[in-house]
Image (tube, rainbow, N blue to C red; front, top):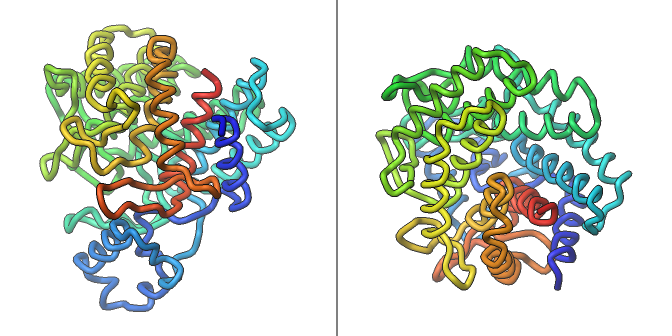
Length: 392
């Protein structure tokens, strides 16, 4: 089966489901759990439910009455993917979709994404469609805006604007700069600062989340030339680059609670740094990109195409690990240099992680793998990733 055929199967599956589905972290959406007020009030019970649903290789969601829903980040990934397909069509690439259908989906998904944004903040922002318990530290209620979800939404809406010239898409996306500047906490770090993950997370910061805040501001600077956006984006980038290890890696986690080095978050960092550089014209951190990419490409993929989760061990192989590779190679203009590896990783992923129905599995483990279909985490992510591959 060709890559295009595999992509069409994923496309058909996702469209049949109307881009709605389950998520690894949606256990608290269970209508059964919602009817148990005592357990709902317990942080430990909430954590057990989330992790139990997430870690179980058996899908408990049907019997627990967890509804399939739209997720803002997932919709943004699908939207960005259709924008990539539109550009691929202009190059004559056959991706199993017509130009008219592609534009129809872009408008549909862009408007759906706008309908999912949060209200009551300084600017446009997006969160997740489920309550999320961050260990036993704090609870993010359903739809709490995060810089992660917002960054994907902003990027996708701007891509949709470039194709459709619908000014509403652009104006809503640009207002997200006010959310980043006014609603996110900043933590001093070295010569710069780090943006928090969400308005509720306070001093709990992660380098990846902060770089996605910089990415939002870089995109907004590109359209407005507001120097304050560029200045703040650079301050966050500087802090994150100062925290980069000598070997080019970054430690990820909600510091100082937990930390690790993994594949796709490293890829997120590289993508965000490249976006900052491309859109602001500031090349001060080119060495950090080069060093980071060298670590990424040499530590997270085996010669035969098997993707690794961590730099020092393989399992669990999460669908994000192969998927982010194609985004990084595209955004850093590295497809030509690493075409052979890209083909091997794509081939391994289609063989080992795509179901015959078209959807992608969540994680592969040595013994009990999770072959559950998750719309945001697996299908939207691979839809976007494969669109970059087809458009390369």
